[in-house]
Structures are given as structure tokens and as C-alpha cells.
Picture 1: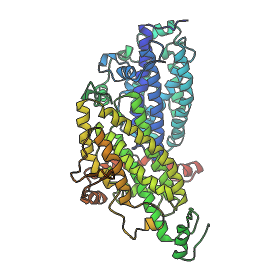
Picture 2: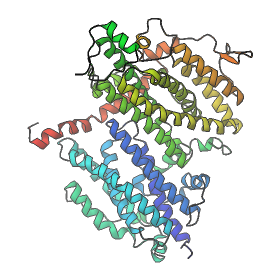
Picture 3: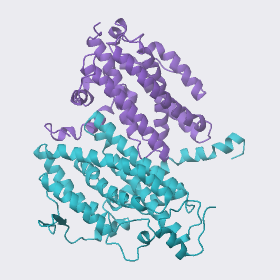
Picture 4: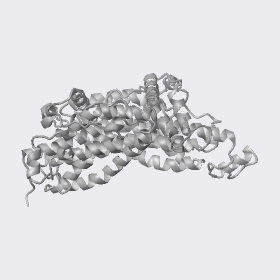
Length: 255
Length: 311
């Protein structure tokens, strides 16, 4: 049986890859500067997992549905593409979080949504994507447990709790953009690559937020301006420049 | 309580006979202090090495390559994590006290991490030259180290450092066979990192060095340094790079490479926290430590909160 593949499915998988890549990139920024050594190691592990997911998804895109024979150069051509119009990342993963409260809350918000996202492709007609979902599910359980373990303790602290709640208020309007669909999502759903549009899971995510943070958070709807994920945030260009800093030194070089 | 010794002579005879000291032994205070200071500096160096490398992780030129570099830095911080536990068990300072002394500029770490990685070439040079120097030192300690907990941790550290050095070597080979731009960049990195890496071994060991006498270290600094020069000088030359040592000599009869006179002033400056990047490195680490204090405080107070103890 031929694997389903078309431009819409490509865009759908690419958006997932971009989110995973940039989330991994952001977590990597915390190595060595987290509040204590165990957290340095945890953020680093989680960052590596997300980058690994991104590599699998970019390989699927580069291999038009079959990432098995794709080499690193093809992956990097997507992961370091200089053309901002190529990217489909959500704004949550493009923004820096110099404060650890924001980093932790983003980690929780992202992974709570990521679980729902992988579930939608767990029985994908695109078999390599379904296989990636099974692998990711095992890792993501640890990610959620990590974030929850910290929040279990910190949210009840008189100083830490308000910091984290404030971070949630800041991040929530941006985080909801995770659910913003790309135009190609409809094609992915039509081809049974995804079981349903991602934003159908938004109410589940919103309930988890209310349970986790014990507040009556108003989770906004997906911003129409983000629709299609074709608009890059102000943070994207500096981030991409930083990621490409070595690559642009000499286009002929292999590092 | 473990074993006791009635005198330093008896303790030293035990060490000379290949005895291994364990944490619950009633070791002489001077030994405890010496082995603690040695492990604390090693732990600090692993952590500060991770901080030196982390500057370039987000700029790593390749997605899977970035995963490898992240894993390497995770190893370094993980080594620090293990070593701080081994040091803390000696009962002289807690881990937090060691970290706070480090960020206050009160304790030492290896000279090389007082320098800044300014280019990607530097990042590769650290992995290639510096990790090799650190590995050589650690292997020499592991070979015959009298303090058991440290020796056991070193086994794992050495295994991982071996991977790091090989990763650096592979990356160096890509550069050596790469473009003119890459080769020029890496030559500059060799020029900048050769001497700090060589100085990592320290000046010649003193005759009365207690680290040698108590079998904490098993080889003299000058022996390790000479062995490193013997390996890396010809290797770099064979790839067409120049070693920035005008006094470097090669004896064709014995195929021995010998470094020229060494200026130890840069090493002394780093030991006094006066290296080229010391102020920034320590200052940023201290500022970050302070900015994240609320997390540690909240976790410290969590058991009391759970037990209902008023703040």
C-alpha cells in the first residue's frame, strides 16, 4: 500500500517538526543555568528528546513520507532553512524565556498539548508517523512527570506559586497558538494521517490547565491572526540567525 | 565508622601497600582535606566546562549534531553532579556551599575554563585538545587512586570523556579536510587553546607533592604533559596545522616531541580568577544562581509546608 503523501500532509508534518525542533532548542538554552544541577540534566534530556522527535519528523518530510533513507543533510536543509516563509512553528516555541518560571510553565503547557497531538497520529495511515508517536509517547510520559513533579511542590509555595501563575497568565494567549492549524491539516485529516483537527483537543487541554493550576483560567480561542501558522513572531528572526550563525560562515563547509 | 590508623606513618604504609580509603574510614584530616580539595576542583571544572561549551550549543550547525553536543555537555554537568556528591560525603562542605564558593570566586576550577570559546573552531578545539588533556589527567588518577569513591566515579567519567575526545577528533578531521575558511578558523583555535590546554597539567610536580605521596594522583604533571605533547604535536602537524610553540622540538632518533619553555604566568592569573573570561564566566553563573534562588528556597521549605510548620 502506498503511503499517503501530498503538499497538505507535508505542511502538517512540517509544522509538528518545527515546533519540536524549536522547543528542543529553547530547552537547550537552560543547560548549565537551571536552578540546580538535576534540572540542568533534566532540561537537557528533554531538549534532546524533542530534537530527536524533530529529526524523525523532518526525515519524514524530506523522504516524502518515508524517512528511512534520509540523511542528515536533508534534515538540516529543513531544520535550518533561511526562508522564514517556509516555517510553520507556533509562537510559543519561538520566544525566549529568560525567567525559569516561564520556562517551566511553557514546558508543562507544551507537553500537555504534545501528548494530545501525538495521540491524534498514533494510528496514522502514515505508518512511520504512527511509529514515531509510539516512541514519543514513552518519552513524553517522563517529560510530563518531570514538569508535574516540580509544579506539585512549587505551586503551593507563597513566593513560587504567584510567579508561576503570572507566567501562566503571560503565556496562555501565546500557548494556545499551538493548536492553530496549518492549511494542510485538512488534507492530513482527509487522508487519515491525523484522526482529527488538533484544535478539537483544545477543550481537553484547557481542562488540564484548570486542574493543574487550580485557577479558573480563561483559555482563549485560537487567534485568527495566527491561523495557518504563516506569520512569524518578533523572536523568530533572531533565533534563526543564531541557529544559522556557523552554517552561514562558509556555505561549502561540512562541520 | 570504618578503619582507623594510629599514625600518619601507618596510614601512609597502608596507602603504599595499595590500600583503598573509603568514606567511612577515620582518615587523617590532612588526607581528607587534600582529597576533598582535589575532587571539589574537578567537580567545579566539569561544571564550568559545561558553561564554556553551552554558549555554542544553540549555534551548532546541524540538528543531530546539536543533539550530540547537548549530550556531551549533559555528560560534563552530570560528572559535576556525581563529583559534588562524592566531595560532599567527605563532610567538609555541602554541595550548595561548594557551588556558592565557586560562584563567589572563592574556589578553583581548571585554567582552560577561564577562557571564552569565541568561535565554533574553539568549541571543537575544546572537545579535541582540552578534553584529551583532562582525560589524560583523569586516567592517571584512576590508575592508582587511593580514595575509593572517587576512583569508582572516575571509571564512568573516563568512559564518557573518551567519547567526547573521539567526537572532537571526528569534528577536527572534518575541518582538516574542509575548506580554507575552516582550516584558518581552526588554526586560530589551536593558536588560542594549545597553551591553555598544555598548562592544564600544571607546572612540574614538587618532590613533596602529597597528592602523589598519598596516591591520589599516580603520575607527575610533567610526565602527563610530555605524553600529551607527544600525541598531539605530530597529529596536528600531520593534518597541516601549526603548533604555536616556536621552541617545540622533534628528535627523529627517538621520535620524541618536546615542548619549548612554558610561560606559567597565564596559569597563575587563572588561579587568581584573573583569566581572560574569568569575570564574565563567574559573574554570569553567580547572577543566574541568584536569579533562580526562589526555586531552591521553595523546594527547601516544601517539607515544612507539607508538615504544616509555620514559615
